[in-house]
Image 1 (cartoon, rainbow, N blue to C red):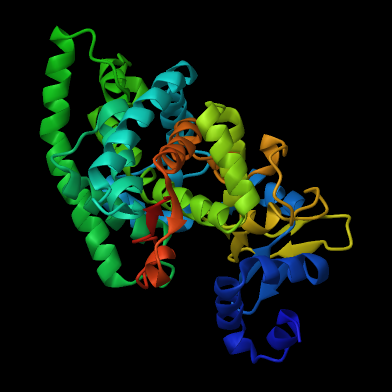
Image 2 (tube, one colour):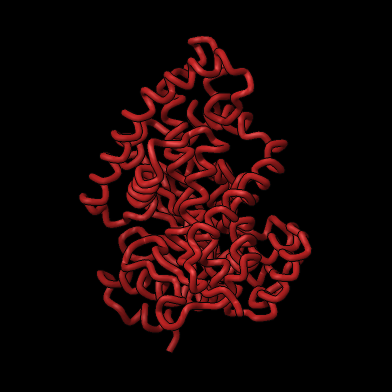
Length: 418
């Protein structure tokens, strides 16, 4: 009996719960069945799951219809009005344009080199004398925090604060579908603490850049901008966007690294290919192994949107479906990356896929702002872990990703190969 047979036999009031439980248990299996039998699943209660590659692209391209509005109540009280929770506003046009200009493509070689150094330091510091390494607390969260200081220019008061702020904001903003009030409260507290720290830090950094023209990071570049009052990119906008550099960059990066390595360890041939590429210094080939591995367990397999108008997805096809205003739409990029109508041999591990077949950073107007940094940072951290010899799972549960019942990987222990 397939998923849809069970789903159809379930009372309407319980259908959404059955759907989410099945997806959590077997994402690729359930979405494969849906792509074949019901590519656009409309569940009772206004939940819509979109599974085909072209349809996911369509939903994420229509950002004024399928909006990010639900994020506002969680983002605004914490970090202030932010581009990630806005569509078709000055925050998107102005703030995103400015940040895109400041995170320069020409910086990326230097970012990669910096990540190499930071990752080596983290691995060396975290590895135990008996050759064990718990990736999450000792490397995959720590290096992105260090890079947030070294490249973005937001070092924070200490590692513990940065990790706590990142986790609290990311959890509520993106991984709190039941609106747990305790999770929300931690997010608000993190935002207040960040604002208190940044009020003094940014003022001090503004003074520093006046006397040190060589001080060059993203925050310093923001502070050096001279814009007329009519543009509206003032101190509050700089503070909000500085907080945003931390919010989206730690937990997603950490999850991507451990989930990609986990998939490589399940595929000895792919792991051997990744190791050979890592040792030869062929970073492009190693990165291809990394992103392909992540395709089998992406760090975020769904992108949530709120429909604010009726709209027919896949119009003119036999799967066309009209999504009603008020629906919560889950565009499954995880499913899209396995759509046999678009992806050649989707069940095979291949390193020759075109970049546009990967939706790890979303798609459309809300494509991840830090995608260029992530393209360097995530695979390079993984590369340094493997180069250090950590290619064997620890025995038992320790050698498997452990979320400890939460939304993020918390532990994943590897052993150094003999």
